[in-house]
Image 1 (cartoon, helix red, strand yellow):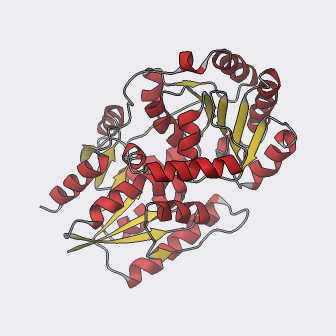
Image 2: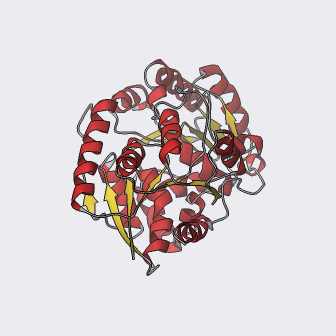
Length: 368
């Protein structure tokens, strides 16, 4: 039996790893250990709980206003101590967070195989997104098995001389298929308690990325002020990220606008409900770019670069940056339409719901 540790620390990691964890747990060849670094302690634990998963190890490394280097040092040290106490035959990491970087490095230093989920995403601009672009390039150099979500990601790795690549597709679609009707109904009830109306005039906004802090966030919020005034019959829902660089500013600028609903971070089922019902999404999130095509909702990406270009090529998403006038112009075009006319048709380019199965098969073949 192989001991596999799965390291995560944020809600997106928990969402995308949950279907893989649930599948591997049923395989008698493996004993799984789940490690939550605590990068987003409450959100990640809550999301794991939604899928019926509990962490075996909780590193609890975060504190307020922690620097990138401070976070890396704490996670590396805590993981080093854990790997000294326990025996693992492989490490699974997903994406491009600090937890991913530290998990990959500690495993590499101890000559333990690293399996990287969602490998090969590239913007080739180290400042967009920051620091994620650097993290994923580093992890690609030390990982042993690379699970890529798209053919474009596979092509990027092969161009870099990396060949142990498996086209698994993206497990975020597997996660969507795990949502039960009961979970959706319960989520709808919780959203109603927040005052969110799931009708045809709903706009979802998320803005939290590090590169959008400061002046960029000012421009994004200014655009939301303008749009909410121009379309008073629409409801603008913005789950507010707890980062102090975001939280206070969002509440100061938008807190008194009647048709803007500021909520704490929504749980997974709640966020899916809002996405599914939204007329338009304005976001700087990576995961939402992948999930939204399933529901045919147009997405305007408030970033200047995206590593998820498949959605743009397929017409599901459009880059608008933090350009106030462009956000207003493009969003106004969609909001002026009936929702039925703004729906997008086509197959989600990121997955078909069978990524976890492909990943399990490739891991079995790795040890043959």
